[in-house]
Length: 199
Image (cartoon, rainbow, N blue to C red; front, side):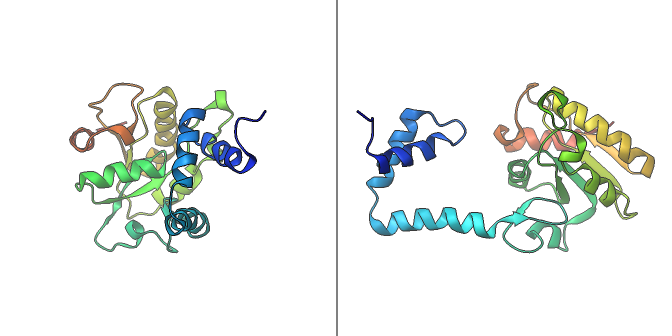
């Protein structure tokens, strides 16, 4: 006998496919959805469909956006001479929470990892080099996570950008090696930003 009727089983499978969600949590979420009233359930489903339809990558920085150019890139008050390079969109959110960084971002959407078959061509390194070639850019901050892949990606990118005459700096980390930016508190991130050093 099957564990769930087909409709519930499908819902459980969908939740279980999410990162970090096991079968028990997936089942709990599925039953939570079933307990919603129709309006809440439709809003929940619509939010997923709307996000899939409307959220795209900003053509400038590759952060996620629901407009043609993201809010940060189109903000005239941001300092376009400083680019903070991060692994993913969630890292942008972590820095924005500090309310201290006024430059712009470049989202790589991954890190160079030969073991996982990820080469520089599979992330947005080439676009970053093109952006850094603009003479208005004075500094590129490498804010990749302090992991082996994060460090090697930072070094690889610095070797491409330094010959352009642009200063390349690395965050000073007040967090453990192997930690993730998205889990760091605002004070730690602010100190890391202020204590960055040239690569």
